[in-house]
Every structure is written in C-alpha cells, then in structure tokens.
Image (tube, rainbow, N blue to C red):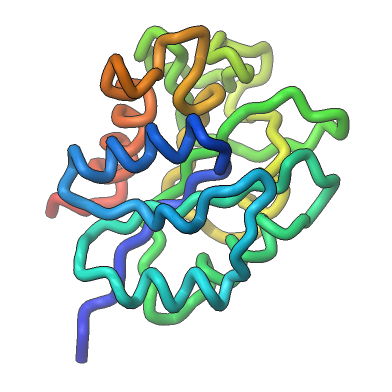
Length: 189
C-alpha cells in the first residue's frame, strides 16, 4: 500500500500568495499545487484531489480562497474535500488573516507576525499582533475548526505583510509558518 500524501492547507490564493507558496514549497523540497491559486478558488475539491495524487513530491501545499464569501464558500468546500480525503495526511494549515466584512474566525495554535516572531495572539492582515489570544479573523477560515487539523498557524496576508513576506525577500514568514507545521506535525520524525 502506498504511503499517504502529506498535505498543508493554505487559506489564501491570490497572485502574491501563489508566488510565495510556490517559492516556499521549492525551498523545502515539496510541491505547491499551482493550479489551486485563484481569488476565489476555481478548482473543485475533487479536481484538487486528482492533482495532489499525481505529484511525486512531499509535502504538498494547496491554496484555497473564498474571496470574502460569507461562511462556507467555494474555497472552503474544496478544502473540506481535500482535508477529509482518506488518502491524505493533513499536516496542518496556514490560516491567513484578512479584513473580512463578516468576522469569520478560527482558532490558531500559534501565529507568526510580520517580523517573524511567534505569538499566542492572532495577527491581522498586515502581520501585526491582534488583540485575541489563539484566534485569527479571515475569509477562508470558517471551516478549519471543524476539520480537526493538527497544527494551525496564523499569518498576515501571504506574500505581502507590508513588504516583509515578499518573494524577493524569500517569503520568510510563509516559510516559518510551513516549518512550524512540519516540526509540530512530526513530519521530520
């Protein structure tokens, strides 16, 4: 029997996020499902499952985006399909903050601010520490709490965060979030 694919979920899918996630996947020897980008997500969960199964790389980073849709939108539905697939092991999720009009939020185990510091507080879209402990506001985070994800790391807007997470700088905040997931999920064991 083949080993299960190990997957990291990313709740952002715009062009900046795509570039940052692709770079970080390459840096760690994994693969980003580049076709998963979109604002909102364009591919269904079933289409993403097919693409994940085809990649020979590990871990696999997959992006999901609802583009501000309230409650479970297209991106979150696709994320639910991927996260509950029996042939995948979900290592964790990167919960991305946004300025949503609908106060959707999720619990996070830890956040990484735009300076690369770990904090028990959530962070906002700009990667600045928020007021809530263990919680982040975003527009594609609605269903994370229901999916039993082992490690959820909160970050600001991937590839941006006031210029602190750009591809030109090596997307250091995104990379740190991925490394935390790999470490805490037991990936290296």
